[in-house]
Each structure stands twice: as C-alpha cells, then as structure tokens.
Amino acid sequence: MSEKVYDKQNPAFYALLVALVVMAVGPIVMMLMTSFKLNVDIMSDTSSLIFMPTLRNYETALCDFLWYEAAHIDYCDKTFGRALVNSLIISLISTVLTLVIGCMAAYALVRFRFMGRDTVSLSTLAMRMVPPAVLLVPVFGIWTFQFQIDGTRAGIILVYVAMNLPFVIWILQSFIVQVPIQLEEAARMDGAGPFQVFFLVVLPLIKPGLAAAAIFTFRVAWNEFLLANALADRNSRTVPVTIVNSMTEFDIDWGVIMATGMLLAIPPIIFTFVASRQIITGMTAGAVKG
Amino acid sequence: MQTANVNRLTPYLFLAPAALIMAIALLYPIGYMIYASFLDWNPSQRIGEAEFVGLRNYINLLSDAAFLESFRVTISFAAIVVSIEMFVGVGLALLLDRNIRGMSLLRTLFILPMMIAPIVVGLMWRYMYHPTVGIFNRTLKSLGLEPVPWLSDGSWAFASVVIADVWQWTPFIFILSLAALQSLPQSAMEASRIDGATGWQQIIYIKLPLMMPVLIVTLLLRLIDAFKVLEVILVLTNGGPGLSTEILSLRISRTASEFRELGEAAAMSNFLLILLMVLTFGMFFYNKAVEMRAARLRAAAEED
Picture 1 (cartoon, rainbow over the protein chains, first blue to last red):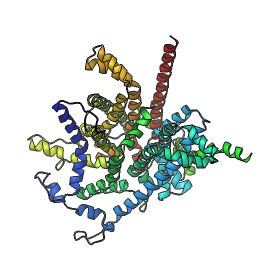
Picture 2: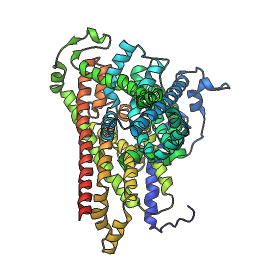
Picture 3: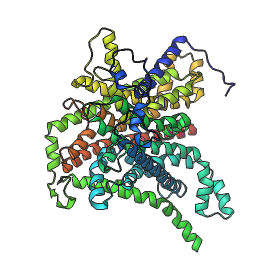
Picture 4: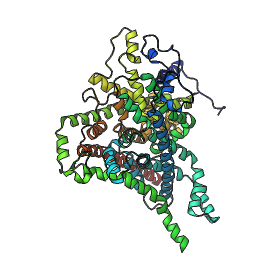
C-alpha cells in the first residue's frame, strides 16, 4: 500500500473534496455538538461554535443507568433506558437468527441447485421491494388477532428476520458461489456430514460476506420505526419509537432529543468506521456483480 | 440407504427454516393484505367480523382527492429525488475516479448518512430547518436576508424533504458508480486515449455506455427505495403542511392508525405494491434482456 503512487491534483480539486466532506459530515457533527449543549446555549443568538460542553443531556436520557446522582435530574424518565435495552435485544437476536437461517438457505440454493438461480434472484428482488408500510396493516392484524404476539419482543424479531432474509440470502449467495467445491468434496471424503461441511468448511470461508450481511441486518433492525411502532407496547418499545413519541410534543427539548439521536446513531457509525470495506462490498454485490 | 436419504433431504433441511419464516411473516401477510383490501375493517374488529365490501375500497380511493394527491406527491418525490441523485452521484463518481490520497476515507465518510437511522436523519434536518435556531435561517439572518419558511410552507417543505433525501442517498449512487467505473476494462480506456479522445468524449462514448448496466440497476434499486421513504418525512413534516409532503407510505400508516380504516389502508398498500412490482419486474427483465444480448454478441464475435 505504502508504495502506491498518487497522482498530483489541482488544488481546486482538493477544495471540492473538503466541501463534499463538510456537506456529508456537517449535519452529524452539528447533532453531536447540539447534544452537548444546554438549552440556553441552543436558543441563544451568539455563535453556535463557542459553548460550554455538558453531559447533562446524556445524563437525562440515560438516568436509570447512572451509578451516581445527577444533581439536575428531579425526575428520572426511564422510557429511553428501557427502549435502549429493547433495541439492543431485538436487533442482536434478529441479526443472529437472520444470519444463521439465511446462510443455510443461501448454501442450499447455491450447492443443490434444485431451483434456477433466476427464480431465486427474482423472488429475493420481489421481496426486497415490499415496503414496510405495506406490511403494516396485515402484520398488525395477524400479530394481534391470530398469533397474539403483539407487544412482545418476539413478535418484532419475527418481522425483522422475515424482512431481512431475502437480502441476506441474496448477498451470501454471491459469496458462497466463490467457495471452491473441491474443498467441500475433500471434507466429505474425510467423512464429514453435510452439516459439518457447512459449519466447519463453508462458514469460515465466507466471513467477509457474513460481516456485510450482519451489518446490514443489524442496521435495519436497529433503525426501523414503522413496524416497531405498530407492534410494540409500553414495555417493548424501541429507541426510534421513543424518539418519535417525544417529538410530537409541542415544545421539543432539543438538547436531550439530540443526545438520544446520537446514542441511536453511534452503533452504525462505529460499524461504518470499523467495516467500511465490507459495507461497500455488500452494497455493490447486488448491483455491480448482478 | 440411510445416508442417501439424509443427503437427499439436506437441501430441504437447510432451506426449511428460511422458507417457513418467510411464508408466515412475509407471504402470508401479503396475502392477508390483499384479502383485507376487500373488507370494511377497523382495528378493534377481528378480521372475521369485518364486512366484505368487494371493490368499494378501491373505488373510494380512486375518487378520493387526498389519495390521488398523495399518489402524485409520491411519484414526483421519487422522480425528482432519483434524478437529482443520479445526476450528482454519477457526476461526482466520474470526477473523483482518480488515484488520490484519502479516497477510502472519503468513501467511509460518505456511507455515514445512509447508515444512521432515518429517524435521526429527520431529527438533524428538522433542527437545521428550525425557523429560529436552525443553521439555515441563522445564516440567512446574519447575511441580512429574509428567513425561509423551510417546513411551514407547502412548496418549501417539499423542497426541504427532497434536500434531506438527496443528502442521505446521493452517496449510495456515488459508491455504486465508482465501483462500476473502477471495474471497467482498462484496455478500452487506453485504446480511446491512443485514438486521441478528449476527457468528455471518453466519458460520453466509453465510460457511460460501459457503466450502463450497473447504472440501470442502481437507478431501479434507488427508485424502489425512494418509494419506501417514510421516517425522514414523518419526523420532518409529518406529511404537512396540508398534503404537500404526504407520500403514500405515510398516508397508509395514517389511514390505519388515525382514521382506523384498515381495509382502505390495505387497498392503498396494494396500489403501492403493484406500482413497485411493475418497476421491479421491469428492472429484472431489462437486466435479463441486456445479458442475453451481450451473450449473443459474444457468441457472434467468437464465430467470426
């Protein structure tokens, strides 16, 4: 890498790059700064860059996790803390489930070819286009009246797994195709059963694909609002739902709401910095490779 | 005998969980929705108690000015947003397809807007559009200009929603077209350079036509997603003022939760689904057609 030679570019070009970066990241930085401000600073007319940073907004949002007494909190609203726990549980479980199930299905579709690849791509594509809004009415009806799992975390997890499966199968397929079949045959020769071949030979080889799929699934489950809003009750609400609920009030507490928004944004931001290469692979796998 | 049986069953065992979950939580609900669209149904009733009304929901919708307006808003939102994003995204990719330091960092930063929750994107923009404390109006005021009613005037609100979406999704197109550009055959590029093609000629006659298959897929993926946008608009304007930003997804969720007309909401969902289906199948078969033509050309070339 270090030997790579870079072309010299026009300074105007670098100015454009800087402008693009500012445009892309600016709103996020602004949210971060606002989350460290007191409402007095937010509303004041003076420059928005100079202020005394404070953790108060985060303390208010996370008050039930604090191990010390924060002086400014008279009443601890536990809604957000509970929602954070719900969000974590729901996204983690649904990610794991989607990956395991999706991986097995993708493997079967690639290796045993009992359905044409076209049928599979067409149906995954067809599933991918279904907007959450379309699922809203039927899922609400079925979950409430037939399965009676409305208001539970399991109910929300079930929708998320189903929603993410087509995409995960689609992505993982393109990785499994590249695993040389000779490796599997060798393992089978050594006496491994189909499940052993899958878990001990194939899975370790498609780790990058799994990482990409995991990030995308987690992101959908973590960020989703509409279905969670319809299905959750007081105890299973996720973070996006609580944020929207607190926005409907007339007087918005910008500092606290920006802190909660920041907390919701942190996991995806971390993923982006840690695994941007996998994310780009995952994004391009569907379109560029066909 | 035993092992042969196991081997024959394996694919089905591997496929069963996925098929089962998608059947009960995806296909069944869609079927249920199609059935529900023929009912007069409110959320407190079981579906069995709802009255069957045939096509009444659909007919009501087609004569409902608010629905038609939100249909129009959806289409124009998707069309405007996708054309701006394609133009800017592909343009930036062509411009930045160079061997420069920091490209990977730039790509990483560009992914951020689409990774964070749409709810949070809405939140950030709502803060920036705020009439008094938002950065836009503050800047306008310090320049001595009139503040703009970003979210409180119909056409401004539509523009604001478009701007937020363009901010969030242009990077998607940028990254896909950059990947396409970098996978183009170098030989074609060099040949054109030797033939003396200028930068513009290279772009128009070589790069864009070679990128076309990827661009079409990108366009349609983005178009499908543009019909799914809901959270950003919900947080920014909640469809208002009036109906100026009320896209179909939002109208469906309001019809279901505020007006408590599940049957009508289901009929609306059906319209949206049909629209998207036409788009998706169009995309798939176009792709197939292009692939087949390429294969035919290749075969013809090999025969010569």
